[in-house]
Length: 471
Image 1 (cartoon, rainbow, N blue to C red):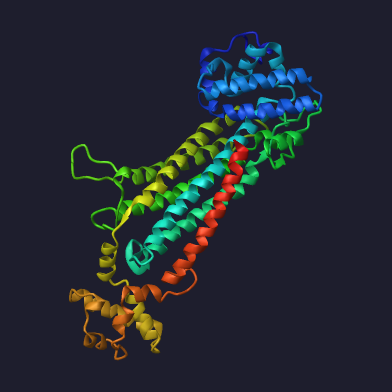
Image 2 (image 1 turned 120 degrees about the horizontal axis):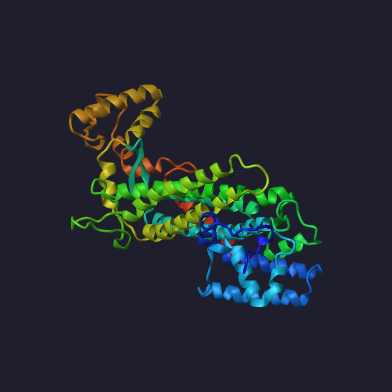
């Protein structure tokens, strides 16, 4: 069978051109969405009296047969048919003859492919919200289990002040919550129907776009046909949101790599999420965390690639837009793999609370609290800061930590020090003294965990309500 658009041409397409311009190698991933959109489109054609019901029934029955072939992996795709739309239409015509050629009435591949990608991405967004919520649950589970565990908090990768390990983990819960909210907000721009825009100007047939939108579960319809076929903002936004998620995953991966090292020894990752060395039998490498960190770059690259493709395109559709899919599919696979692994890796890691406690007992991260101690006794903060700086220098020069000092050593620097200074310096006191909303005090962290639990539950409800509708 000749090409479905070949009437105007007198020569066959050069084989190299076919191979270079074909997208079926990657856009076959949109096969189910393409049929989903076609079923809604042909139903509308029948409802509007554009096609007779017998033709509509034949086309729908054949599309379902093709869908089953695709789902069973029995569909054969051809480069000569260029893309997923033409491959499916060719299969339809081969099955039911010329009636199959009526399916494309009132639409173009331009609005068809845009519809497919909207259908595809809204499913992925719901799935990613669910996966992020599961990661939040894993972090909250570890936070609950370690509500009394104290570790050094860092700035500039230097020990700063003691914090609860649970508080540290809950920071990531907050990060991923922002990611979820960005994805949820993007959904309203993804859940828009471009079908009916035709190639760029609409169609002469009396179609009902609102009926199609209702069938497919779209909340809105594009107001402008030119915009409908040329808009890829929703893909850029998804790639941007995915880049933010990967950035956050990379940050926690870096901490897992550091914490699991011999130098830190704060955690041990489960064997199921580590690999060994081909030459060094003692090695246990945090390869999953490292690879998540590494794969962040490719997701960033997909975002920059998409922005670059779009930066100088005139309206409306241009073949350049074929480059919108591979990066999107790659990002979906990369992000999905990272999220599927991260939650169980977090949930199964062992926390070495003793090593963390040793760390906060052998540093000067409680120094700020001594300054606050003097401030509460009337010393101006800047003066207190200088006194404690000299006290820390004394400790360093004498190989001691603050809790190692005798009271007479404290009083050499200020007569205001008394026996209660030893209570002030205890890690538990340092942590619980920060009893402000969002602080690291144990009661504040417990309340944060409770709040987060409710939010995560709502995230899952949101995702579960959308995923069945989109299948």
